[in-house]
Length: 253
Image (cartoon, rainbow, N blue to C red; front, side):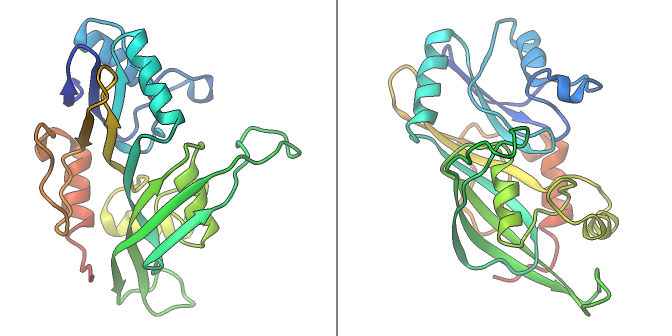
């Protein structure tokens, strides 16, 4: 499978990462065989240098450098918060219209006495729905929200953990979500997966600093059209899942 290219020049490449792919090999998931770094290296015929990560279950925009100097420049841009990341998240319940989650996080594999690291995410509810079907016998209906998540720090599983912190866990999140609710939504949507999408990534170009706007190609009705060069929706099955399973639900707002 060729990875859809969203941007490519001699310094930077951005691809659409499918859900279920790891960015690179890791001992934590020894049985996986799909790795973006190896596939992209073979596809382009040159080395690539990861500068940020997406979880295995997350799909969307992933940027990589094409030489060490570009990798250093992009790493510096992430470190000084010169990169803007925007994700779409399908969450339980009616999320607040706006929320600033400033909740330090300890790495998942850190000792219990390790200090928590600063972590901040800005959340905006784009739309809400209420289905006349109970996913929980305590309630007559089922509510969900489509949320724009903008992390300003880059902790592991930050969006997933911050959504859990405000009691609106990400649907399909087996680690930080609710199992019965995940199974209910998987049955209704016809698919079991993590409903988190790396939608837009704005960063300074590693060679000259000019602003680059990367877009996954997913079009939510209330947004502007995708940026020039974004992948077409038919190129990635994940886009079809969002467009035809999630966006066709009876959203309001």
